[in-house]
Image (tube, rainbow over all chains, first blue to last red; front, side, top):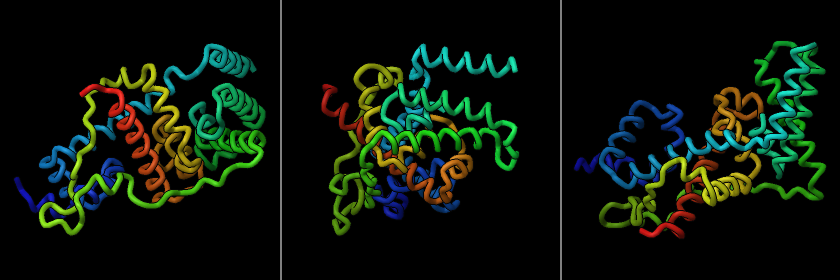
Length: 84
Length: 177
């Protein structure tokens, strides 16, 4: 295990950088440290995987959240719009 | 649009009304759209404004959302900073969950996630709704909400971290391991 990677960016710090990492906003050096840490640390790898899954799940929430009546009203509005 | 509306008002029925009202506004004012922003940004701006005024009208006193500063993971989950070995590393790692996405989106877990989103401070909820539910880019979200790039990212980070924590807590309490 390459301890240096884990010491330079400890887990407590890494969890605060996950969004910056996912947004591609870490410096190249921090990006490399982040990935090296996650490769060596199963807890942080798990944390990152959970956050990614959370984001995917959030993205799918709206799929079914429009009620049939609401959908119908929107479709009607669209149809009226295209007729003008 | 529904995701944006939901970020401000409490119920889906109200959010759907807001979306319909927004469409009417869009149709009415389309001639006034000046092309200074992307059409999408303009439309979502209308939804945000309508949802905000609706939320104001519905709540007698709007509690001021307090941005909780501080870490997104309970500090006690980590080893002390002055520990002799592995300072600031996980003492107790994240609770593992091996739940397929479809299961997270169904039944009680879906309710837990929706509640976690609903309970976010409004600034975090708005950013999360636009980015993760609505699929807007960071730039679009900054434009719609009038946020700086850094603030947008901080709010998104806090919001996502809280939703993850809510899922972890729920599954930890219910999943036999």
